[in-house]
Length: 93
Image (tube, rainbow, N blue to C red; front, side, top):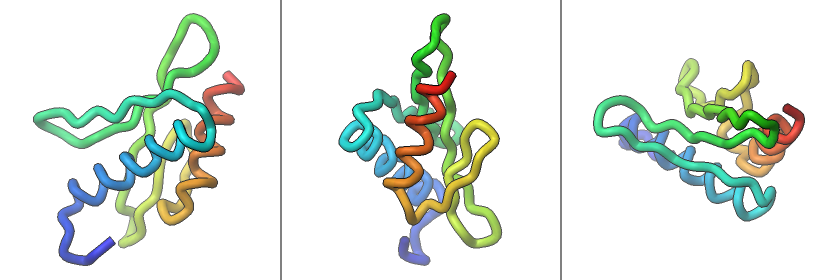
């Protein structure tokens, strides 16, 4: 990410990349929500019934971007690993 990007833009871009990777490599449905007020969040439906959703956020933690979901953290630079972990988390429930 370039240093001149606003945090909101970086966050949205990271979540969009993860949304794409979840569908492409994990065949996992997800929905990127960009509210008019507030921050973007990626929602991934869990397989269990009744259906609940796992929320994924992109967080700037001490100058490093990370994905946060279900009590876990992943470095934002490894989208493939994060997609695999998110897909596992929603399939395991």
